[in-house]
Amino acid sequence: MGAALINFSCLSDELVMKGKLLSSEPMAAHTSWRVGGPADNYYVPVDLEDLSMFLAELCVDEQIFWLGLGSNILVRDGGIRGTVIAAKGVLNEMVMKALGMKVGAGLTCAKAARFSARNGKSGAEFLAGIPGTIGGALTMNAGAFGSEMWNIVSSVETINRQGELRVRSAADFETSYRFVNIANDEWFISANLILADEDIGEARFNIRELLAQRAASQPIGELSCGSVFRNPEGDFAARLIESCGLKGMSIGAAKVSEKHANFIINSGSANAADIEELILHIKKVVLEQCQVDLQTEVRIVGEAL
Ligand SMILES: Cc1cc2nc3c(=O)[nH]c(=O)nc-3n(C[C@H](O)[C@H](O)[C@H](O)COP(=O)(O)OP(=O)(O)OC[C@H]3O[C@@H](n4cnc5c(N)ncnc54)[C@H](O)[C@@H]3O)c2cc1C
Image 1: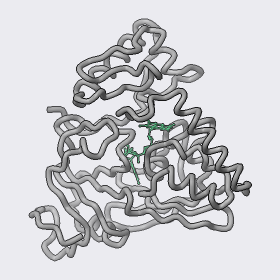
Image 2: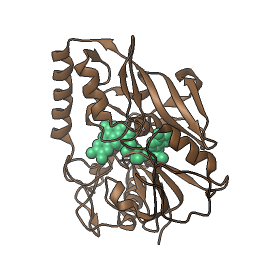
Image 3: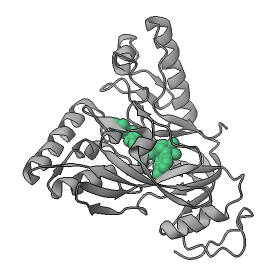
Image 4: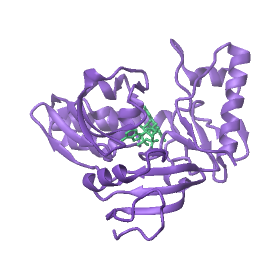
């Protein structure tokens, strides 16, 4: 990638950028719902050193939004002000270690799961069907089939907006269901995972089984962000939504999945406003009929038009 061609007043002229800096980049191209307006600036670093230099040179008041694979965000139609950092496919280290493996934040969860199985390890199989990056899985404490990300993390490497790297133990973080308390201006670069020994064939079989279970219960292949709402304590958001008769309901081209009521599908031409309106409608109906105040798991970001 060559030096950036656009004039970005937030960076000094002396910075030799090796990555790609785009302006007004449509976020719809980078989210699994295929909706979202433009990001003012969108930076794709070439490597960690380049990323670190870029961050260090950004104005202190520039808003930064870190993007994984965009599989758990609803970007509003007005887009994102400030700079999006897109490290997917860049920070993609995967190395076996004595007790497990080290994985980069830009690596896909699917690749990490397959790499682990190939090397005769178990514990990371649940990641196989989560269509995000390791960075996104760390931030969301992503989970499935009774496992979750921070159960297998021993330490992480992070970067701050000065471009400084730190190694932190898992014990430095508070984690719970779909939550980790990382600071606003600090992002994940890599993680060390603790894994158990496993027969390679068995680990691969486990992955196939989990993917089959997912395909049977979720609308895989359609445009969604996975579960829209967090499961309330002791219950399931999908059960509540279905019990209110909302399966199949649509606003514009945004529709509650017939297969899994906690999924909202973009059937092609939905915009973010349609999806957000449907989310608010579901919340209202479930509150009225079930007295449960559903909270979104998906992160809603950016500006409305
Ligand atoms: C079909 C489908 C099935 C799904 N199934 C599951 C499931 O079983 N379990 C589950 O938990 N989720 C599931 N999801 C949701 C989603 O895939 C996960 O939340 C995933 O971890 C998000 O990763 P991402 O890279 O796409 O993150 P993004 O959506 O890009 O970002 C999510 C959040 O993480 C932040 N972020 C991303 N990378 C970093 C980083 N390196 N450092 C700091 N912050 C960062 C972003 O700023 C944003 O706030 C599913 C989604 C889909 C579409």
